[in-house]
Image (tube, rainbow, N blue to C red; front, top):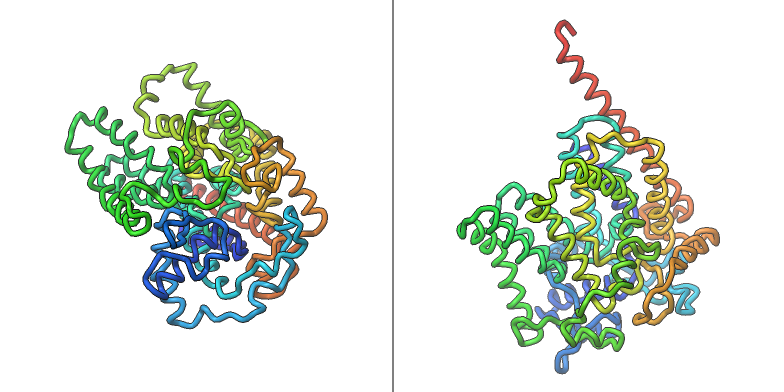
Length: 484
């Protein structure tokens, strides 16, 4: 299992995002200012990102604070050992094609070399590592249910064939928040309520929309346990994160429950000022986030289709509807999906897949993988759907990654169709490959060659561990036979 974890850490770290895009830079800038003058205000670097908020005469990142705060001591260590040294050429070896929709043919002028070490470190810590850890946790649980080669293939295809892989190795909050929420979910199922509250609270401090899980799971705990003590353990676990949330708001906005999102300066996000941009779910959002090819959860995590099929079949045969009413995942999935569907920019701007649903997708992938391990799945259908998922995420990862523009270059433009996927193919066939990979950055390997080498490595690692699992299973079965 440790070898499996190391292999997935390699695959998830092969592409590490050092593009100076607004979202990642916005999270990174407070790290610099906190180290320089102990303040989260980014006034000195305010021109480097469009994702920012203005409170009085000061500018701040508009993001949830936990990944940024955790990055501070790690980057201090990087500085102490001298790994933060750069020059004017750092990050500019190969052309950057992601800004073409804005009329910029080569985006190397948008790179800030002094930020590259910080973005590199944070992409590993808050993107690659938690993504590999989620795969490890899921595989360990699935193998305990059914230790066979198909289980390994199921885990690998499920995660790498999902849009979560596109955000692995990036300094976004989504993967890190998903990892923490997964830990909270696992612990609440195991009735370790204090630890569940702790991890769920930390996930909320990384992505504010996770707040919906806290009252939902507390209510379910109260109904299941019929005990105030168990519910209080969950609350006490979440309390440190809530206190940090209040303190951070007091320091930045001066109001305990008002976050920096309410002060976003981008006109397109002015809707944040009214109930943080939440209203009633729209039919366009519900379709767009569920089955549409543009941003639908199912097309971007296609292995979930198998889980939906088997779940409805078992519901029809066994009719355990009442159990779903107090199921932590079922209740959270339904409410959280409608919650995001009610957001005025539910599509998330430039993105591959429904990035606001990553925390939900991680929980669904975990349970779906375990659920399917002992099911009789048509292997032909599985590999067809699985390969479609792998090819889709691989094409995005090796070209534009998450920088897939919405239907116009205006951030407030509502999405239309799946035309964005044609943009990925256009970039691929024009050899506009992503150079943010360890071979191109470290050894000057052409990005196109690196893209195919990653695919070869993925195939080899998947079949290697599937074979290894099969050999172990064979030895275990042999040892159970008398005289063998």
